[in-house]
Image (cartoon, helix red, strand yellow):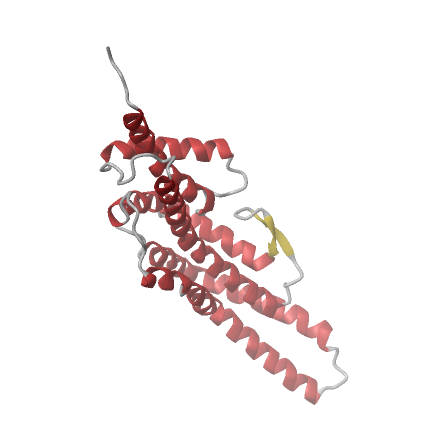
Length: 254
């Protein structure tokens, strides 16, 4: 007679539950997968599919039962690992959105907004435009496949066992906030520099001709110059966006 003990049943459940929570956490935070238009059933189905494919290749978890105190801590750790990998990829999108917001502010388009398809919320016009472009570049370079592959490889760097993640790992994650501002400024710098020259020229013009209506002349001029510089910078922006995404994928586990 075929019998299954409670310990064997807990071990089988844990062998699939621990990887599933890591995949589900990534699907809820990663770019494209966490999009509001992606149904939750699809995210759960994708996590289940990846779990079925990957779980048999993993070594047994150090904790047998996911219903014990140690198993609960291990589940929380899997969720944190998945969220961290998705958050690292979100840094790239936040960088481009910040660059677009700085450009839009200098152009006078800070009051114009559209719906960002990535976050399903109102964002400034230029920032939302650059965010859509980055999403297309992300899909063109198979970023979603590389991201899922990095999560699969993370089981080698962070196996299914209770272990403390080193302090430098969290410090590097916190330093990603500084990278957002630095890379965003580098992307927006050409357009901002051109608009700064326009503002300087308008300031000199206002001093020489005080009767000139600065708002009537300056706003259309900064808008035209900003759009022209954005159009001229677009061919050079694509390699920068690819490098930005490659840099976001580089620190992920391999």
